[in-house]
Amino acid sequence: MKAVVLNRFGGPEELRPAEVERPEPGPGQVRLRVRAAGVNPFDAKVRSGAMEAVFTTPLPTILGLEAAGVVDAVGPDVTGWSVGDEVLGWTDTGAYAEYALATAVARKPEGLSWERAVTLPVAAETAGRVFRLLGIEPGETLLVHGAAGGVGSLAVQLAVAAGLRVIGTAGPANQEHVAALGATPTTYGEGLVERVRALAPEGVDAVFDVAGRGALPASIELRGGTDRIVTIADAPAAAELGVVFSGGPPERSPDRLAELADLAAQGDLVTPVGGTFPLADAAEAHRVSASGHARGKLVLIA
Ligand SMILES: NC(=O)c1ccc[n+]([C@@H]2O[C@H](COP(=O)([O-])OP(=O)(O)OC[C@H]3O[C@@H](n4cnc5c(N)ncnc54)[C@H](OP(=O)(O)O)[C@@H]3O)[C@@H](O)[C@H]2O)c1
Image 1: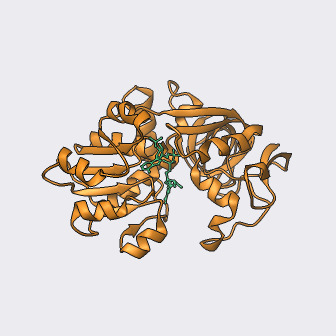
Image 2 (image 1 turned 180 degrees about the horizontal axis):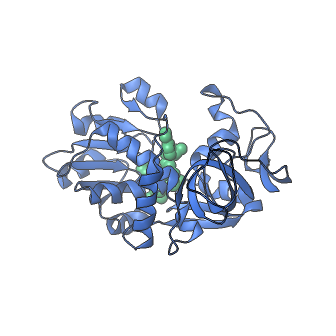
Image 3 (image 1 turned 30 degrees about the vertical axis):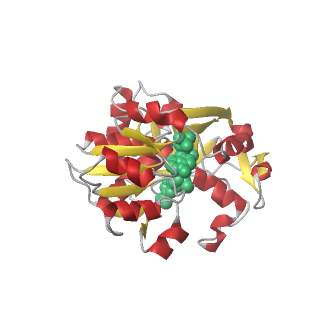
C-alpha cells in the first residue's frame, strides 16, 4: 500500500511517500481503507524527535492518530462492523496511509464528508478528557486559550452546548470565527488579564489552555491560584507553575464520537477544515501546521 513513512527524526522533508506492506487486522481490530487522515501538531512533535524524551517511537513509523474511511477487513472477535461500513476513529497503526488498523471507531453518517469527519476523533477525546479534569458545570465561565484551532474549535462548541459561557482567545483574523462558534472572543498577548476581567468581572471558573503559548501566568492571576486550570500543550510551564498538564491516557468513547458525528452531519456542530492535501504531500501539510495559525484541521486525502 501507499503510505508516508518516517525513517528518521527531523523536518517535514523526512515524511517520505513509500510502498509498504498492508497491515492485517488482529483481534478486535478493523482495517480501514483510509479516505481522510487528520494532521495534528502532535505528529510534528513525534516527527522532530521532540517526544523521544517522554516516550520512544521505533522507526520506521507511520504517523497519524485519526482517520475516516471504509472498513475493508475485520479481525477476530469484532462484532458490529462489516466490510463496507463507513467509519471514523482513532488508528492503531498510523493514519498517513492507504490502509490503517483501528479498534475504536464510530459510524460515519452519510451527510458528513470524509474530511469533516476526521476533524473529530482527537479533538473530541481531548476536550472530553480535559472537561472531566476541570469539572465544568452549566452556568460557569470557561476561558479557552487557543479557541480557533482543531481542539479549541470543538471545545468551545461543546462547552457552549453544555451551558457554559466561553471566552476564547485567538489572533485578530480569527475573532469572528471564534464568535461564530459561540464564544466571546478576545485576543491573546499583552493585556489579556485586563481584557478577560472586563469581559467577566465576576471571574472565570475554569481555564483550558489549548495553545500552550505562555498564558498560564495570566490564567493563575485570573483564577487566583492554580485550581481548575489544565494545559494540554505546555508541560514544562505546567510543571514549573504547579498547573495540571494532561497528555492522556486517552479516554476514547466511540459512542460519544458517534453522537458528535451525528450533530456535525445535522449542521449542529461546526467542523472547520483548515486545508486538504494529497497523502503524498504530508510534508507540506506539516509545514502549514507549523505556522501555528491553522483555522481548523489539516487533512490528508488518501
Ligand atoms: N496533550 C494532549 O492530549 C493534546 C491533545 C491534542 C492536542 N494537543 C496540543 O494542543 C495544541 C493545539 O492543538 P490543535 O490541534 O488545536 O492545534 P492547531 O489546530 O494548529 O491550532 C493552533 C491554534 O493556536 C492558536 N494560537 C497561536 N498562537 C496563540 C497564542 N499565543 N495564544 C492563543 N492561541 C494561539 C492559533 O490561533 P490564531 O491563528 O487565531 O492565532 C491556532 O488556531 C498543540 O500543541 C497540540 O500538540 C495536546
